[in-house]
Image 1 (cartoon, rainbow, N blue to C red):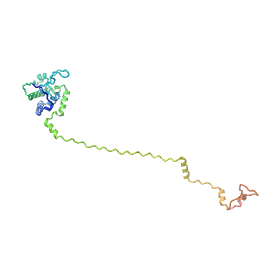
Image 2: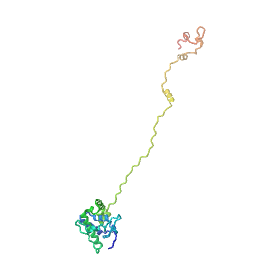
Image 3: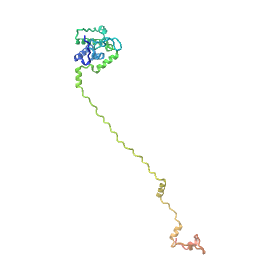
Image 4: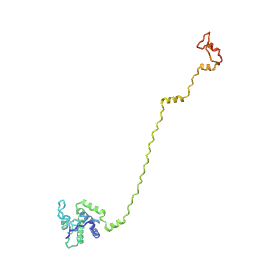
Length: 239
């Protein structure tokens, strides 16, 4: 029996639809077999082709996993749980081998649930995650979805408000300080003039018809420096 490898890109539409039909017969989510096959081998191995030609993993663990769904030799021979053993003949065609392996994997997943098919709950989460990402969509539907998918809507450009132009802050107005000496002078000049008492000698001399002389102040033949009553009698009524 030739031992060849395949990739997921070589799966035919009929093989994918066949897996969906097996899912439905076993009450599994649509896309379960396809997700398990991708989880186990990426569909890189044809049915009957061992994953580890030496029978041991890179960690040295013995493994007889084979085919797309990684079915162990012991599991295929004695599955238990009411599942019929995997029976593949050398004379079977590749299509027949694929169908028999798919039928066995579907029945075993139904009997053991996905978590028990692999390594527990994390394995089940990984399988379900693959289904959620589109493994449950048929190739025809995938193509239709791609063609009819609405064009992405570009978000409206967000107008960013322009920052207001920077305006230099006005310099603080500092009151003009006069020179204290000048301010005193201004205050003095602005103040009303104070009334100064008149000098009686000024008034006396202004109203005199002539300038008083020393002889006018003579009294007893001597000139006096201080005026007296006699000196003023001559000017009575002139002031």
